Length: 345
Image 1 (cartoon, rainbow, N blue to C red):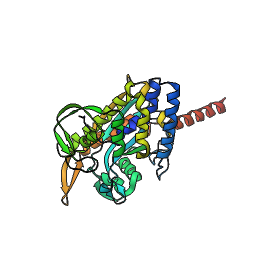
Image 2 (image 1 turned 135 degrees about the vertical axis):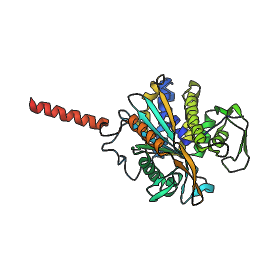
Image 3 (image 1 turned 30 degrees about the horizontal axis):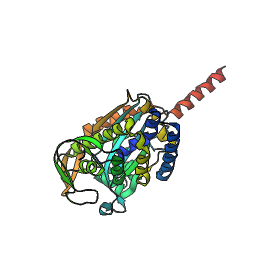
Image 4 (image 1 turned 90 degrees about the vertical axis):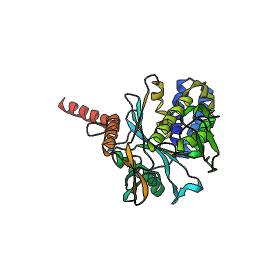
């Protein structure tokens, strides 16, 4: 038996980037903590992938530090199987942009439908956003999302479906109320290999992935909502004290299935969000739109008014704009004021 949902490697993000925080939040024994820390450091080093632009978004004037600044992370779920390989890179089957507000200890996440008709800079034309990663890898995906919302994308976490399956299984499955009967392929593209009945149940990795990816039972909007719910379900299960003893399996699951430009220290810096878990908030948003065909190809045309509203919400959450300063800028400003005061003295 098994439960539902989503597909996303992003989910892994939360276990991944937050595993350290949860670890300390529950006060695991020192020996086990050291063991996990060493595992996590090794895994992080193997997962490093730098963006061609460097460590700073072109929309930033100074580096950001998750310990002090509001930041954003783009989570990419990809299917890099040979069956779906596309022009050397896989399409991104799942995209979620998350903004983190350091002062509020809050997170806002928006799911981006894979067929969204957007301008893709690497192609120099409008296309499905899923093709950005296919044509230009993570760099192209990040650039496209930055242009779409007009905000900086500071970090990314890219996970493939194998990692998703293994993480859910390492957690012992996740509980979910499956909204409808489904009969879907598994990760090996075997038809009707996954059959789920409607109702509350525990889903294993393959079942959760099938439910997350299915597109034939409801809308793209509903699919995105399912995927966001899965992210929360995985976070909830990973944050439970019953899961502490499974962290080594979780880290192993992520292993060679993740790429990120977050360093280990930057990941650990998110522990503040977990320490404040009583007030910790995750708000999810959806991009509204309409189904359309252009040259007989299906696209999801985004509603401009809604897109602008979501963009504004993300900017406000990041406090991004002329009036917002990163910690480095604030320190520089304070130093400058001190110099002026000394001169006047």
